[in-house]
Length: 110
Image (cartoon, rainbow, N blue to C red; front, side, top):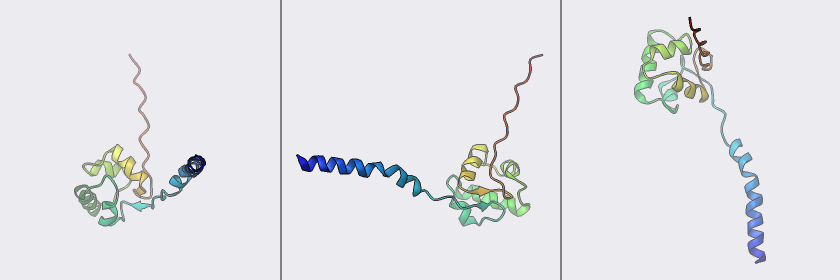
């Protein structure tokens, strides 16, 4: 019986340190700029498949992206939700992280 209590106590004490350990294990994303990223770097981002990566590279070859709004407008398959997820993983465009557009003011009734 004493052994069981000791085992439970050890498990409880070990469990107290787990959340700090889990959060410390998450790496800080490296910054990758869409105007300079390689195909392999873009493919490594969650949410980008080979087709979208090729579209980004093709659009960039025509002209570098001015910012996130330019990338979203020129690359089919990249919208605000995906742009936010990619930015959270460290992707920038022209050195800038994704910032969602401010909500439009409600129109006043006439």
